[in-house]
Amino acid sequence: MAIVNNEVQSIATLARIEIKPDEVPEFAAELTKILDFVTRMNTIDTTDVEPLAHPLDALSHSRQDVVIDDDICGTLQANAPQMENSLFLVPKVIE
Amino acid sequence: MTIYPDTVAGIANALAKRELSSVEITRHYLDRINALDRQINSYITICEAHALEQARAADRRIASGQGAPLTGVPYAHKDIFCTKGIRTSCGSRMLDNFISPYDATVTEHLNNAGMVLLGKTNMDEFAMGSSNETSFYGPVANPWKFDSVPGGSSGGSAAAVAARLAPCATGTDTGGSIRQPAALCGITGLKPTYGRVSRYGMIAFASSLDQGGPMATNAHDCALLMNVLAGFDAKDSTSVDHPTEDYSATLGHSIKGLKCGVPKQYFDKSLDPAVAASIRQAITELESLGAQCVEVDLPSTELAIPSYYVISSAECSSNMSRYDGVRFGYRCRDPVDLQDMYTRTRGEGFGKETKRRILIGTYALSSGYYDAYYTKAQQIRRIIQQDFKNALAEVDVLLGPTSPTVAFGLGQKSSEPVSMYLSDIYTTAINLAGLPALSMPAGFVDELPVGLQIIGDFFSESKLLQIAHQYQQVTGWHLLAPPLGG
Image (tube, rainbow over all chains, first blue to last red; front, side):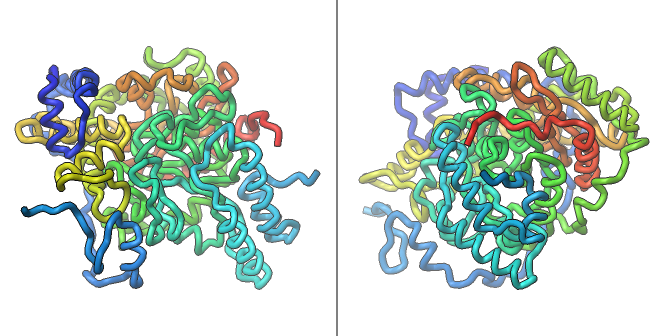
């Protein structure tokens, strides 16, 4: 199944990744090869086979919703590209 | 010149007898790293001051009689595990400036044991790769042959242990990332049962497959490290509440009467004939120790890689969505608006292989394709698991190669994604099934190490380590170290 150039751009838009125009043909060719390879999956009939999500079919456990970390706000904020008054700054969203 | 012990057990023993101090052995490893790692590039960050501080604390702890079995023993930590106050890059430009605000549970366990962190090891970006060539910090050289890859994604950990730049290391394994580099570098590595080692603070690639584990020169050392790493963790919702054990307790037991299955699909045309001969020889050795081997069938083997690449890429695309340039990590310069910030941050911050997998995963999960790819892959995952269950109902463990070839040349496969993926042909199925598996050195081809893989039933880590240990009592492959000087 061939992935064409404009499909690469639309997948990249969904994934929020900038792909430069000159990179598109190479990505298209590689994605096509990978998808051709995975279509090998269709050689086996999987009707009525239950999909497997967790290898032990275990249910995820949960814990009480309480804060268990020490006060790490300062160290969390130290990693942010831009902060002001404990708020994460991003480019203007609404004009 | 002082000769230092180079195994975890040897160092722990010398520390307990006060023949050696933790500061002395830590200094020894730091000196080796400083002398030799420029050529190998196995470490991303060397934690010299922090290591010596931990070593001094370990010496005080031992002196006060409060030492745990591995107190004062140095280790290398894959740069995928969060370490409080120390950069945790995951091999990516995206996290090049990330100082973790907390410790992974595994890091906490290592700290509580009193072990000494020498540094954070190189790896494929976000653990996506089989050669360590996708790292933002450059490729790692295989210590046995510098123009060959060490394997991946835990290539830095494997190379550091093989080059004796650490007595042991942590690794993570999503589709073979502990076992394949262990095989290619000639060391021992264990991928535990899914859920056995906490994933909290272990940067996620494919959450239903990722599992951390020990890497060392031999099985005994892996068992000792496993005692530190394993355990239920309430902070990891997929952690399995299963009793832990002393993984070294049964190492000395004979394997007489052990029933081993040899999957016929693991000896097909993809396997290098010289590697096959080494593996056959290792199986003969195990038979001479009393193991009984029979051929078994894993009919869906060739569907493992396609299923694995769909599931892992889908989970990757979801996990990688957190890197948006807002709260931590890389952000592009001068974004004009929010959309521009997201797309350029991710376009510039991720390397090519990571982008490729995000795109594949995004495609497989997109409307109209979900059932054809993701659901189909998960159905095949169950069939693959059932193959293993059927085989393991007849035998105790399965034996075969870890990798179809010995280490390949740097750059040899990096332009061919599918051919790189095929180097994981014998390892990915085990992650899909969630089973534990171990790789250990079992010979050499063209002066490069060959790894034998032992696959067991859920929570059979002790048995895998016991088999490897028994093999290592009568063979010497695990004792060989690359000639590096230093």
